[in-house]
Image (cartoon, rainbow, N blue to C red; front, top):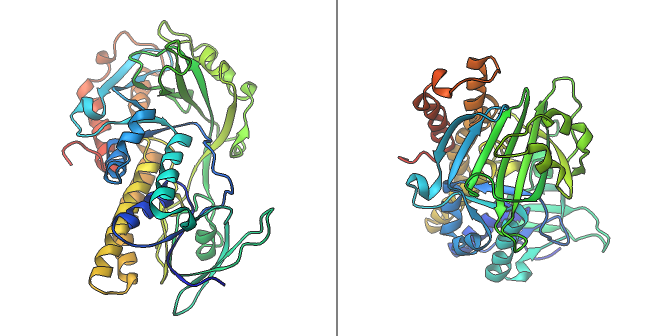
Length: 414
């Protein structure tokens, strides 16, 4: 068994890499253990809200992000008939100091991964190490790993372990063996399509609601083909209490969801054409997990989706993980400076972040940003209306939006 390392970061995704970079920035050594052997630019789109960008900017990554992302100008809501419901400026256009960015998830991960290799050193970032179990004693933690095609990775000893290994976390399962995802009948299908710019070309668009079909659409790469077209990320969401739960990353079939959106042809967008032009479609279930009573267990704690998986609504999963990373890095640096035991740092991190993220998990279930469209449908009976102001004021809809921002931690005045 190798010599004991101080801090082991389990998982080299957004949370794990951001945490490792934050530790390095504070002069604290760590080792990262990522399950995937070959890190590639996979996935679809992700939106980085201003509070997520703030954390990435503090790590010195904003120039790299802006070079490959699209800065959102506005967030716009429509009902399923294509009628305008509400819009608001976003990011710098709304007065924030930092932008809101749409980016390919694989490119975001590559930027974080490359930065970790550069700053920590390749020898401290271990791929092909998927944790299968752990044991603790008074002096540290022993991590064991799944076998790979190259053999069986040797166990690792660490003084402290931070688990950033995602929604199916093996570390979380060690402490909560009966842990299960919560599925409420909402399935999603995701893809990217080459398409001409929609609306401003920097618009984050929501159409419809989950009970009658919902689309989330935004650009993630500008001028992708040299002809002015963009790479457009889209997500289709449908709630059916009788539906079985979709698989993760399984190729999706258009026949399973496209008929719901067949009539969604507006003068500003042909939704079926956008969906049908995707080269590949993936299906996902929309799942989360109930808030845990605790994350920290002696020398081990949870972070990101391992701690608080949430519905991918409001673009908040990555943001909360990034706030986790900075919060724990700060607490560890403070504890080390006073010569204390890191159990105190892990406990203060849990005390700060567990209740805050639990509120976001619950709000994403009950009053997400698309509650704006749900309210319009409720008032109109789901039928076309003459003008949204006949039903509800923009100020009342703005209050729904501001309430979500406040809970999620990115209200402008905060």
